[in-house]
Length: 385
Ligand code: PSV
Ligand code: MN
Image (cartoon, rainbow, N blue to C red; front, top):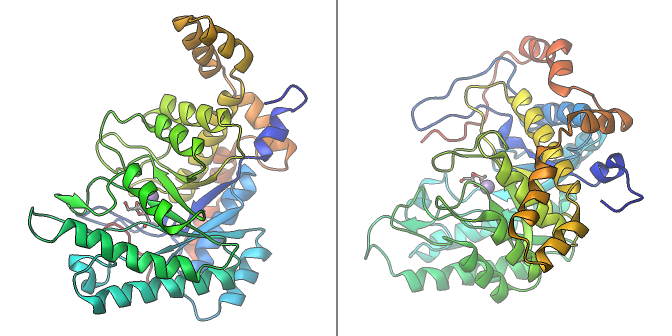
């Protein structure tokens, strides 16, 4: 934060995308627990997202997932989002649920399957254009379970062939975000396993291809904030998927397990001197109220960002130059230990949002009202295999 900026101004720069798939029913490999009032289609998912933005003031865009959010009138969908004060965030193609993708999508040995996958990606480019979205966010479930199952180098070549076609079709205002993940659902070799592989792919595609970092997509012990620093330094940090985990890709509420790591990521984002990249929540709430979970996530992000803004960068730089190891560390600890809750509450109120989003949401009876309205129909189910 520069000296003339107030926390309210600084928080205005924090713009979070919430995921449409985080509002619908989701579950584990074992069960889905449908929630009363859960949205049944993309329009209702937008309603819930608008409530999160209204109460927090920091969630003005919604990332969509296709075909889960498919509709036959994208102009109407865009108009509905705008009428709710929302914009459409990144478009996420789905290359993992069609039975044809059992052995891969853009890496599949059969050219017909690769064609279908590429056509879906191209369709998503058109959808994004119609919705005014500026990014395709690509996560592949592609990989192999056994050594020798397929040729790893050939798979990389096929992947690049398909992505070149998609990259060429991207209108100027759209970028391609490439997400990596070391394992799951594949358990021997994932086709984009880490940030190095992702950045190499981006280099081959062009400057509008950048890497997307997801908290849950690392092996234990990985220094995620350092990856953020490396990618930001070379201009290839496309964005962040926020969630938290204890074991694998748990998709829990951001800041719930490791809030210090979240703070350190914001320290690197601010320290890069660049505008904040695209920041998206990528979570799946199975047992908790979904809108409440999203509200708490946004509040946790605001507080982590506010704490990172409080880091005294001049003193930090001085202590680093002096080789004052623990003195420098303490600068971070001081900022992290600050209670920013009153500041964030005041900043939200100043922006017309709520001092206490969760409390206000619970008292509003929103869930009960929606439960009465949304009684029948199907909904997206993520995570049940
Ligand atoms: C699956 O691991 C995942 O969580 C990826 O992180 C994607 O970004 C997201 O789902 C939406 O497909
Ligand atoms: Mn993700």
